Length: 171
Image (cartoon, rainbow, N blue to C red; front, side):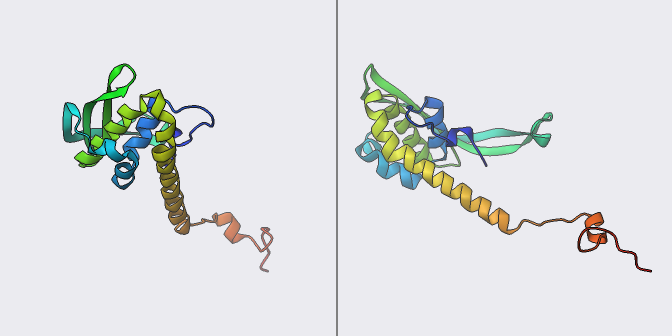
């Protein structure tokens, strides 16, 4: 599945929407080591991690009328990290699919840290870039699996025709 946020423009710092989209899909196994000692700090909770349901909508043909497809499980939280941003305490928000409270917390910590311009470049290199590569690799693997099951359908007209595509008389 293609997401506009997967393509990071060269020589431009990522916007908050871009890094939030990457953090929402970042696996826990990549968040924990990349955040180092920040992952072990105790934040001030503005909204402790909580799990709930969100409605997913789809569109027929991608452009048609919206319809409710179903519900997904989402975990969210909001926290404050003191002494991170240049204006005092940074507020980080994390939303992730599933029930992992720790993954939502680490996504919120990374969001708070990325709001500090002094830390953006380092975190982009050690966290966001590897996650983008991981997501691209997963997308390529899904695409390869789908291509392996792809079926080429021939039209009846092509099957009825001869080798060169023209009909032969059988008299």
